[in-house]
Length: 115
Image: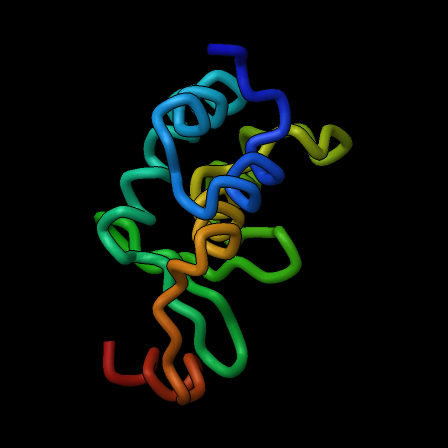
């Protein structure tokens, strides 16, 4: 089986996350890719009216226009390298490609008040 070079296109074509596509995500993003796949599989990517949120193990992280508010994105990634992304942002991409985003018809800013 040939390696998957563009995992986003491969998901669109396959309409599912196959083993080779998951391997390509992990190859491209390492542990961040693995964590992203797990988050999508566990339904932890949620879209509200104002933000997309990825539920982590310790907090919820806002992903907007491919940018995340987590410490990894802020301190560890090279902002000039679009290939470097935190696992939250990768999870949003994977969930979007799979149609696996959990949609909520409410404002996250309102939900956040209860957390």
